[in-house]
Amino acid sequence: MTTNDRVQHEEDAAFFDEVQAVSERYPEAKRRYAIANLALEKEMGIDYDRQVGISRVEDGRIIKRFVDRDDPILARMRICVLRDIHGNCLDWREAEE
Image 1 (tube, rainbow, N blue to C red):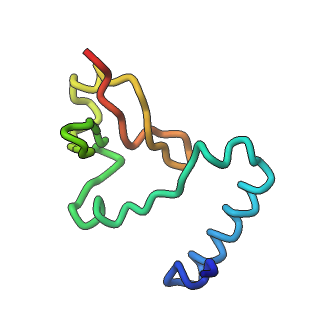
Image 2: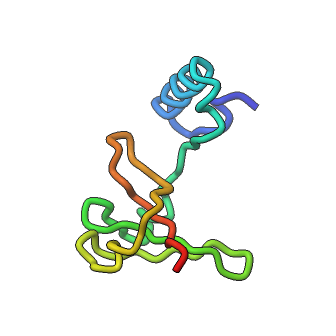
């Protein structure tokens, strides 16, 4: 399956071709990162400028909830698991208590 078979739009295909080229130049980092599709978050109306996801593992499932960025609960979160291309954290993993 080619990149063009996996994406719906021409601009997405070009984007993924560039990401693949970069990952080939940095093979040591290649397995530490992934491209995330935020379609479900968009469908839910999540505004990453205002909100952030907080994930936890529960009974073999990943549970994610969204809170406002200024919510005090974020003070307890310590592990960022998803960043945007500008380095802003979009999703945190709950720290062990």
